[in-house]
Image 1: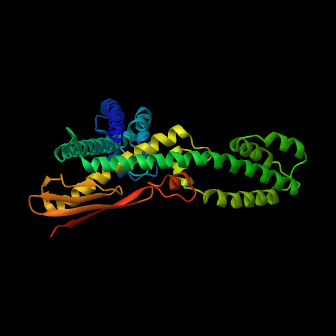
Image 2: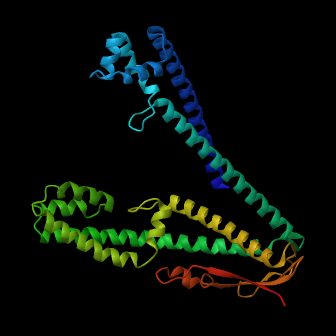
Image 3: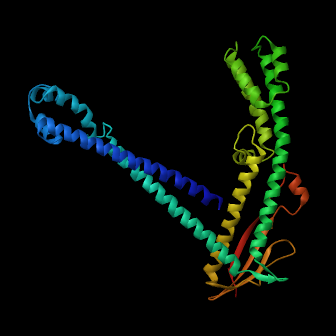
Amino acid sequence: MADVEKMKINLVKNEEKLAKKIALLAKYENKKAKLSAQWKKLTNEDYEVSIKSMDAKTDELSLYGKLEKYYSSEVAQLYFDISTFYDYSKWTSNPIVNTQDGIKELEQRCQKYRDSIAEEEKKVADRKASIELHSVSVNGKDVNVIVEFLNNWEKEVTDYWMKRFEYFEKEHESYYKSVIESSIEYMITCNSWEHKEQITEMWKDSPYTEFYSTYEEYYQNAKYRDECSKAIRSALHELGEEYESHFSIRQIEKWGKSKWSPKKEAFEENMRKDIAKEKDRKYDQLIKDVEGIVGKIIDMSHIEVGVKGDLEGYVVGDKAECELWTSGAGGFNTNVIVNVKHGQCFHFRFYVRKRA
């Protein structure tokens, strides 16, 4: 429901923008009406009639010159204020047209949010109803075996990625320490700066972000800029290839919302959100695949989790019966999870087949 709440917040924001746009349009239209009334009072004509009349005159004067000649300087000056509300060419900016376009866009965006919210809420309601409908009584408690299986999958995957992040933090610290040491070594080799001892002392215990920003500052005045830059990039590339081969750094950076120093709180929040979303998707897809074979599901009490942790059994529907099983890998061996460099996150596949 987290995404639904986010969509509701965005809907409210866009509805507020829409209300402001509508109020702005009314303001522009009111201003246009006042200027048009002023124009008619001065010329005894509608604005568009006057402009068409001036365009038809063949003397070699600008439109402003014609207005001043055939009407008055006051009319010519008024032209600059009123024309923007009547000009619809693509080369000029008509505030009324632009605001109308903005209103149309916001209305479409708001409707899209409303449709998406309704769709997601229906999915949640349908999923809840499905879970309750297909639960069976175990020791006096209603249990949906598929949900229990997916909850286990969610826990395994969450634990796996949390251990992966712990490993990342250690490797991250070691990696950037190596980057700093190697970079300083290259800088000294390239004779890029005069105060080598001072720079080494400054950076030896610094986090990478501080090192990098300081490096950029010094780099601007580096005597041998190109040589230094090439050498440092080479060091970063070599170290980076080794660093990134250890684990899925890109996924950690994505969930941690930072390239250089992903934060554990952000990582865990976004990771859990994505995994929960994927769990719901897996449930919906399984029910859809089963219903595609058996029709309306009548009985799922023959499904159980086997000794290897996989689902197995069959489902009875109003049209047919189908076999259902999963094939999983990774996650059950503690050593596999801890050994993140070569580990395998628990994953599985659903299989559905019409029962003979």
